[in-house]
Length: 214
Image 1 (cartoon, rainbow, N blue to C red):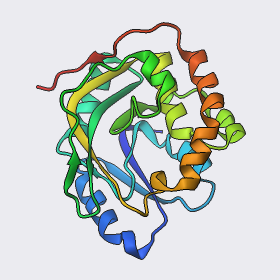
Image 2: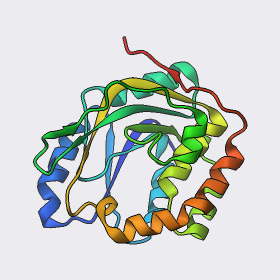
Image 3: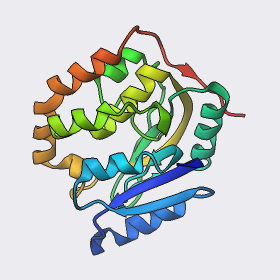
Image 4: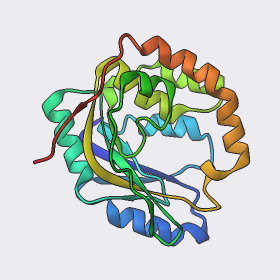
């Protein structure tokens, strides 16, 4: 495991996504960016990549990082010792135009993280040492949910800090996996099993503290 931050992008290298992948790469500045073939054994590949560096962030191949959000999250982890630092996200369309911008921002609680996968979503920078080995076992048993389980474990077992900026642009389009009926049905059906895991990590409820930039 190398010191510092590695940014990981899993991609299927589809020609129709090449422009988006180019935008994704251009938005990751100042850190190692690992672009990995994600067509096989997605959860296992995601797990291995989570240990590429001291801190790890995931950016999907059709999304973009905003400004210096990665730097701010790394600073938050360095100064607080938390397991995960995260920002807010904006939603963009296929052409990169803003659809929604989450203002005003409400408080996020630890219980929110345990109950809802999007409570702590994009952008999230995770401390690799905060990831319990059983995460992969749970994800393989359930068949889905490795992303949420990693973020939730880091937050609920080692603490989380929120950087109150828009740090990520999440592209909404017809070819997005999260928009597919198959993915939505699989995640819906797996929610009871996933929550059974995350709620075991929830020892108490409290608002997640902010780390103010500057």
